[in-house]
Length: 170
Image (cartoon, rainbow, N blue to C red):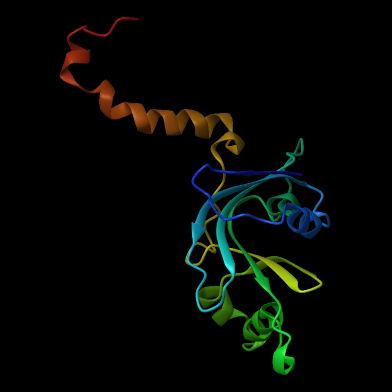
């Protein structure tokens, strides 16, 4: 797996820990760190990441559920004091509170992957508010979607009067 980060990312990361965390997800080809986010009440490192997976020849329903697209990645230290549960445990308790799953589906971002090693934990969440909308990197869109996106971007320029007057050189 390859880890890349934008030049605007200033926080240093333990790449070995991140690689170990994703060793159990072999289909992940690249993890791109896009943006640092506010960590909340803890000293956690919270990031917006784009996960790129190896693309199968045919996308099945199971393939579509794999980690692919943009997520929140959180790296934190375990709290060993007072036998407090980890954030991973607290998240599982919160999502299992309503046995129907309807509350957590609408109000709690889905925990897609978690990993613990010594004093560190890593969690990958769906982006809050976008649980039903998967974001994907541009290069993983199908050819028809590429064309549609390009059409949306360029369509307003095609309608300008100077293009209609033959000022466009082919």
